[in-house]
Image (tube, rainbow, N blue to C red; front, side, top):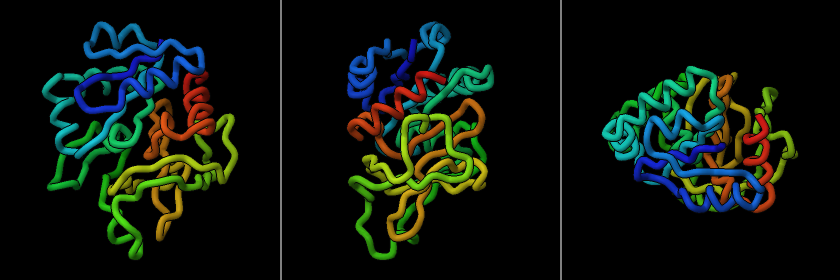
Length: 202
């Protein structure tokens, strides 16, 4: 079963519907006991880093997510959920992340060379040499849907894909069983569905 973590910040039902379309059992989970029954976990997220980080801490799900990741359970963070995987987020101050991947989340404003912020819309994936496990069915250059004003700044060894928006921005990451997508697979049509399918086959 794929668990979609509900901590009050996330696009839960679109993800559940996308998994159902693929014939995959996805359940919304919000407590340690339910999460422990899952063989894969998705951490969604929309909004501001600080608010989401606090929501995870208030529900004590931050420790649960760290624990399951350390046990080797495949974990996929989506959009803000991906950003929370890092050590620190610099949106409206400095906020602590889950620390599962080294790096920090910074504004894209200095990088976009006059393009509009937030970055909203379809953009092509440019794979890194270390193409991630979620791209089993995805070709370099396929388009996915982004909505973000911040991105991950981290060692290149963890970056699996980038997107061009004034400059190259981090589109996805992976460290072992911990993966993240800055875009929304559940809003990315057939390409997004195949990314979710790949994750569920890990």
